[in-house]
Length: 330
Image (tube, rainbow, N blue to C red; front, side, top):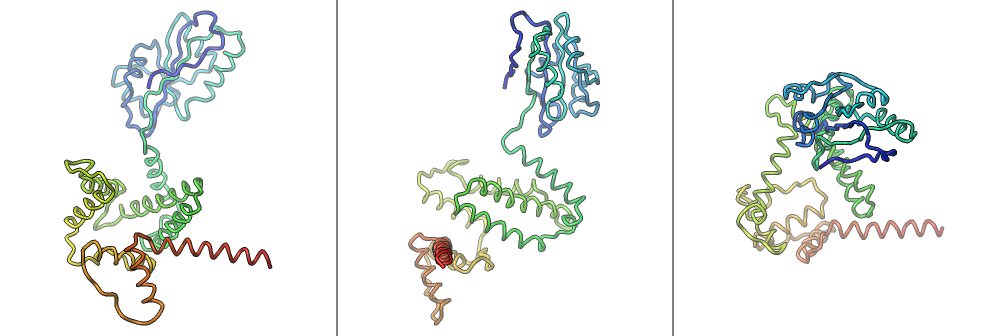
């Protein structure tokens, strides 16, 4: 990313000197600055920073750059540029809004011969950078919040289930704002559990271990993306996935790994899917009652490519709407 130029309101004459506002992201390791940023720092007549504890300062000084700890006003900064000097301001916080506002007012007044003003992003966030903020916030909450500091994996389990259902509801409603919020709530559960896991005295793991594990799994189960195999259809992708998963798990039964605590229709469909994929011929258990009828319906639905749980939810929502209509008529 190059320089972002702030248009000078009084550009009729060559402006004396130059002010470079250098911004950095706290989510990027200090010292990892762009090449234009290092050039600007080395070429500057003065480098200023209002925060003596700014994380970039040790690395700048190690690179031989003299940094003055100062917080000049807009007028003082303009004066420092007199004679064609270049002053670099290492921004703190949200980019020195008070200073930039002051410079904008002076430029707009038309009474001051303004230096050239430039905003230079020295480092900027990569996709996913805000996840680092979430980890830091969770660390503090775990340490300082009386409720959060006492939570356990078992105590949080019910919230994970609730948030998953709320996410499904947001998807079914087609509400984009609600979807974004519910995804955040599900993500919070992951980060919360990982933070608790760090404190385990016998087998601790962190959010990095969680992320590293799923990255390894995804790469291994997508040889058509990261390896030499090819897949041109969703069916071929699923075949790759099931084959590599079978090698990884080395299960003695197709029923292994199926959580029995999931909703009944979803459980029945998952069992039927495992049986069908394995090519087994397993007769349905004989019995009377609604449960066996629902089991048979779930198996038929799965064979037809229909998610019985989702199908029932659609029907139930239609039933809910009908109830509300009757209530409204009454």
